Image (cartoon, rainbow, N blue to C red; front, side):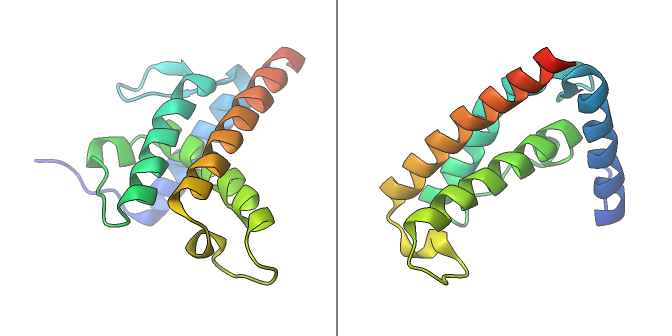
Length: 126
């Protein structure tokens, strides 16, 4: 039987993952081991891409309970929406709703590459 994690627990776990990243450049992986954050970006990209293709797509609860993965999804989602915002009509609250799936995927590709660059540069500075 799996334990359900509430929003407060997720917030604490993601904050811990963020602190781990700040200290080591790694985040907790699926098995709790430290994983370089940039290695989770392709998995986060795949998850977001699946939601672009099917907004009702469900994610494996084991993945959603992984604070490192949730942190990387959060980072990538923010970058993706910023990229979409630049292409959407001005003043749009939900830019992804005004772009084709192809445009959204192009924004996602760009956001993922940028996030990997930023993570790698940040690790080099520490």
